[in-house]
Amino acid sequence: MQTKVKIIFISQVAGEIVFELSEKISQEIAETIFITGSNYKKKSKKLTLIDAPKYNNKTYFSRFYTWVFFFIFVLYKLLQIKGKPILIISSNPPFLPLVGFLFNKLFNWPYILRVLDVYPDAINQKRLISKKNIIYKTWALLNKVVYKNAEHVISLGHVMANRLNKYMYDENNVLVIPDWVNTVKFKPFFRDENWFYEKHFNKGDLNVMYAGNLGVTHDVKTLFDGIESLKHLKGIMFTIVGGGAHSTTAKEKAKIFPNLNYLPYQSEESLPYVLSSADVSIICMGKESQGISMPSKLYFSMASGNAILSISSINNDLADIVKKSNCGVNVMNEDIEGFKNAILKFYNNKDFLKASQENSREISLNFYSSDIIIPQYLSILNDVILSK
Image 1 (cartoon, rainbow, N blue to C red):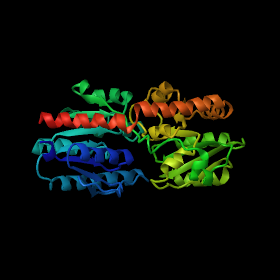
Image 2: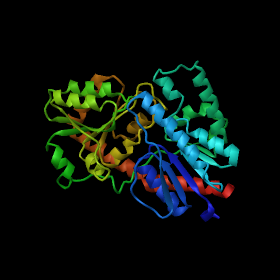
Image 3: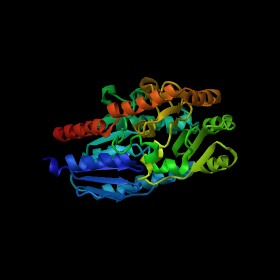
Image 4: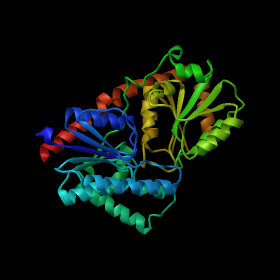
């Protein structure tokens, strides 16, 4: 029975962990089709990749345009699929879950939703629309219908799940399954075995890194102002590795701040060495974004043995993990003095730094590794298959 079931995975932006999940599903459950705008070169006998329109996050307009283009592309491709597959849909684009609802009502296809960011809350948080706006109200109403008809709604954290509950008819239908990391690939490397460290960093410095997208929704003000507040202190070096809407600003700041280096996105093969070069990783969330999103880069930094400096409002999944794991410090958005004090604590208290790093690695192994999280998805899928 299971060999006849197709799984269709849909996500415009898909990082390494999502490809890892799709491969595992294709190997252990059924033939899988993955529709994505992200590049992936590996091939698998039971995994078919369909290249879709890519995501462009440089401006709000480019984001919306590429969201719509991807949505239409997915509709077209799914109409060509025969049978009764199970859809696994990431909320990226944010209105992509409507695809699951439409094909469920038209063809009785079951679907599972993986909520990456909570909408319309996210656009309200950015002050783009108010809760009184007709778009917000309509979107919220559609959420209730779409979520009700899903086999499961998956949240990345408990705070996010609490926010999603207002859109649920049955709160028990929200499953909390965090993102994960391949802890075999991402791990601490000795400095003399890390070519990236040898190439880009000075021995003896406290290396503080921000790696990833510098998008329009990230709190780059706290990041840049915090770095500037420490620019005259020797022995602490900040490195930004990535791109996005604020990458030009990062390049300009690196020219005038003696304690800041900027490097563009690195290859996928280099990433384990990149992250392991850091002593401290900075993870940012936007102001008032409690329960709206959860940055998966946290787990990669933890697996790499980095201490964590998170920048976020209180009562969110990011700050909660940092606190409970004893792997670093969370500072509030726009708290430049808190940012400065946190960095100085890592720099002056070597025991605290080492303990934070060790806790990061241990927690990632015990709670956020592929071997722990992916089987939860496999179990859910098998249950859905057996129930149909």
